Length: 250
Image 1 (tube, rainbow, N blue to C red):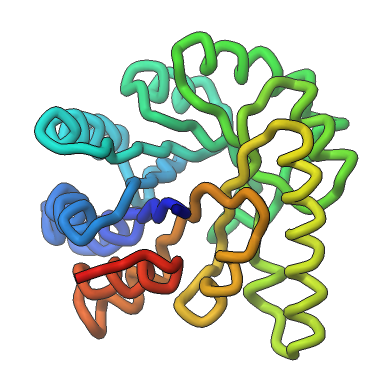
Image 2 (image 1 turned 90 degrees about the horizontal axis):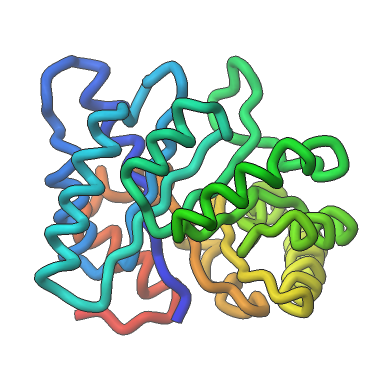
């Protein structure tokens, strides 16, 4: 089964636009879990424009509480650039997974992947530190095969394939071309022993084809799921995305 990890950043964005605690991030987490999400993702940025360090800690505590009461366990994925305060937060909260993502100053959302040739020496000891703390490490990745080999060589457990080019493709030939690039990358990663995650601009229309991607273990979805939730509700949106991944829902 491909796990659905729901990114709740947008809940915090809406809350922060007004101040106070409405909408409540923990209520959103509870709703996603109750609707069958297998994971929760956050991306605490340095400018704290959505998820804050307090949110990260609160969600960690809530998921520990949930996982004590229920099974299977709900995974916690913290993603972001490997700045010291973020790594300290990750080591303190002990999520299931840390997804390291390069950040460009002023960006609205993540849109670049790691250049392991350039950044590998910086990333390798960080990956080692996280893995020594029993935290799975995933790196935001494009489809370049050499980069994927280098990702294995510096010790990452998984790659998260950047799916925006696939999601933005408009014609059937372009969609097939972009998916073929993802498939080629995924097959190589699996051959190297890497796990496969995917994310960025995935929605109800383009998600079903992702079921065919070799070795896909997890998708992380935030913006489009939250946008759909505005129209049909959070519980219904989570179930719709689970259905698009081939999961049975009630």
